[in-house]
Every structure is written in structure tokens, then in C-alpha cells.
Image (cartoon, rainbow, N blue to C red; front, side):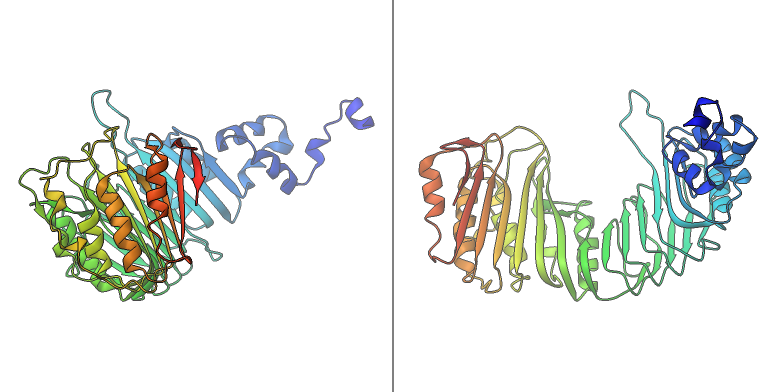
Length: 429
């Protein structure tokens, strides 16, 4: 207190690691660097910070200057968000960071938006934990200003990789400790070419094109979680390409703890064909998660599609379904819509003896939904709990609630109904 009263700078007497804690609370590395103007004591404190963050939108020239002046031997975190950066500038930054980076890297480059154009974002992110540094972990070859041509990642301790909307021709990953790989829409419009060596991988999101002739996967055949490219329930060329690539990837694996599939109905069902037959095999699955989406159209009968998948996943223990409609339309399609084909699922039987728990989101009180729930209860002889979540705008009457609750033929099965409108609202079971 006496020193403060006499105008003495007590903060500057603190050790560097304490001062770093202060600087880490500033919004960006630019703000931290400005503290060098305070006094000679503060001149190089920022240059030894363990974490460096550059807020959006940052000029990569300033990032280059900062990393050149950075004096700490190890950088545990680098966070950069920029806009319209060219590939050469990004490569320079990565090469400067590579020898010292030993924690996490977040690099986000997005395009500025034209008011008359739809959003189009390029993003590159790599997460890893590497105590020995990132020297040699990332190599890039860039031949086009529009994006990456080749991306190669080599690391002995890299744990997670996330790549989204990065146009590239080839991806090489050699990461023996990698546990999570997330690749989304990086090969759209061209033949995918990749070589992935990740023998310890546990979670794979390959939401992209896949061809086993050009994409080499060296990893376990059993994963904790898998998600593939979207699967078109109905459509035609070139939409069937999605299903072919997803079918190929599903055949590659033998067992998946949680299989996450995105099933899409086209906005226009006229002259469409049923495409689910292209999926001929699912890996052995414990938990099946399905998201069924309708693009700008009335909700369709999901019974034929889900039944078909269940015939290939009879050993599942849990089933989660999310029904998604991207507009406020709540009127189901007409009786002659192609979505009701094929109809055999309403009379055929499958044994789901291992199924213990089911949850469905976004129900609309449609007749086909009631039929599906009834059939599902008949297939799952050992079902313990089924939760039915209605869409927020849906009004559920007391009669409908009682009808649903009466579907359980076994006292061991608990039916839980969640809704926000109608008789009583809330939860009934």
C-alpha cells in the first residue's frame, strides 16, 4: 500500500509468469504488444507469452512481424482469424510457427462477402498436443491462389484434425496418435485423393466424397464414432453419387459404437427414384443416430427408409432420430407421394431384441409417425424406454396422448412424451 501511495510501479516488479497471466486476458496479441510502450521492463514481456491470439480481421503481415519478434522457445497456443489471405502468406505464418508450437493451432481464413453473393467460407483448423514441438508437422504445397492444392500433415503426437470447406486436390495425414479426424466438403466437385495413416483413430467425420481407389485409409476397422456424407433417400443422377460414396465408406468398417447418418429428402420429389438400395451394408453398430431432413418441402414418410436401415442394424442398443424441416410447413405430403414406397415395411417383421432405448425429435402428429412408433414397439421386444419429442408448434390432444401411451404392450416399456402445446403441455409418461 505504501509503495502504491508513493506512486511506485508495483505491478512491474512481478515475475514474468504473473505478468503473462495479465496479458493473456487482453483481447489480442496486438493489445499485449502495446504494453511494451509502458516502460523498459515491459518491452519484451509480451514476446514470451505462452499463448498468442490475433483477433479478426488480422493482417497476416502483422502476424508475421509478431512471430518474428516472438522470443519464447515454446508456444503452446496460436489463434489466428483472418480474411482473404492468400495461400503464400498463410504458408509463411505456418512455417514461422512450426518450430515452436507445442499446443494448439487455430487458423481460420474466410472470404469477404459480396452483398449479392451467398456466404462462402474457407476454413482450416488443426488441433494437436505435441510436447516435442511442431517441427516438420505441417508441409504445404500451393499452386493456386484460390486455395490449397496439397496439404500434408506429419506429426507423432497430433490428436485432432478438423478441415472444413478447404478446396484441395490431395490430403496426406501421417499421425500415429491421432484420435479425431473431421473432413468436410474439401473434395466437392473433384475426385478425392487422400492417404490417411491414423492407426489409433477413434472418431471419423468424413463428410465428403470417398473412393477406395484414391482414398487410402490406414486405421482401425472399429471406431467409436463415424459420420459419412449425406445419404439421399430419393433422387437421381448426380445425387446418387452421395450414396455410392457413403456406401463405400460404410463397407470399409466392421464395427462402430455410434453411427451417425444424415438422410436427406430432395425439395422436389417429382420423377425421383428410391436410392436407399445403394446402401447394402452397415457396420456392426451399438448406437444408431439418424437425422432426416426435408429441404423446403412437406414432411415425408420416413418409415420405408428407417426400416431398411434397421434391417441391417438389428443389433443396435439405442436409436435416436431427429426430424428436420427447414420451413414452417406442417402439412404432410399427399397419399400418392413416392415417399410412401416401398410399403412392405408396414407388414414385415424384424427382430431388434437388443434395442433398449429410443428417442425421436421433431414429431408432427402425422399418421405415418404413429404407424412407425407402433411397428417399432413390436420389433423391439426388450425395449425399456421410448421418448417422443414433438415439434414446438405442434398441438397434442389428450386423445392422441392416450393413444400413444397405450401402444406399450409390455409394462417394462416406459413411454415418455414431451410437448409444449395441447393437453396439459410438458411431459407425460
